Length: 82
Image (tube, rainbow, N blue to C red; front, side, top):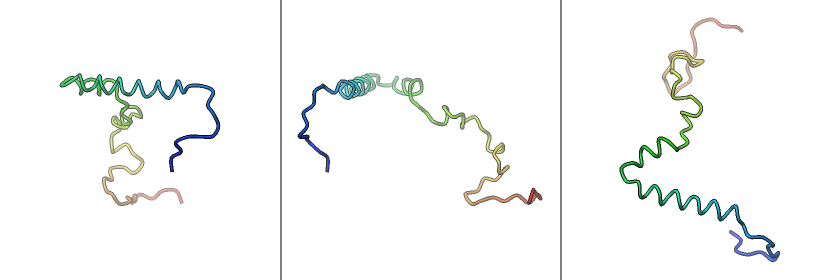
């Protein structure tokens, strides 16, 4: 259950919370007005984890399992350390 009120009175106004809500509403309304330029805005300002962690630039062959492209575990046939 989400509490609606509290018996302890607040002595301050939640400036940060209302600021974040206002910023999110402003960005949303700005995106609505962009129209066809929305894709360029998203590509410029969006957080894309694959680009941030450089996963998109990593070739599948450079991984620790070689060229295995299976959803099942791949095991090397080469003799390795025991």
